[in-house]
Figure 1 (cartoon, one colour):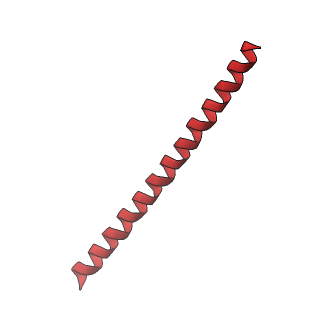
Figure 2 (figure 1 turned 30 degrees about the horizontal axis):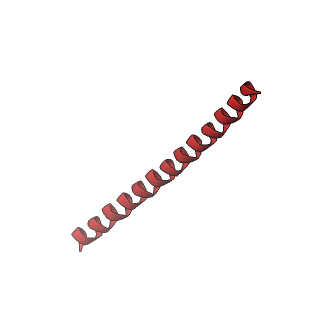
Length: 48
């Protein structure tokens, strides 16, 4: 019984950790996209 409980706990912990990683990767993607947009806007301002 305790072995089964340990396995279930390990699986739940792994799922929570992986979902946190997915959110982090998504956030990094948004940050990079924002940086690209800001750089593009700065270039347009300089060329005017």
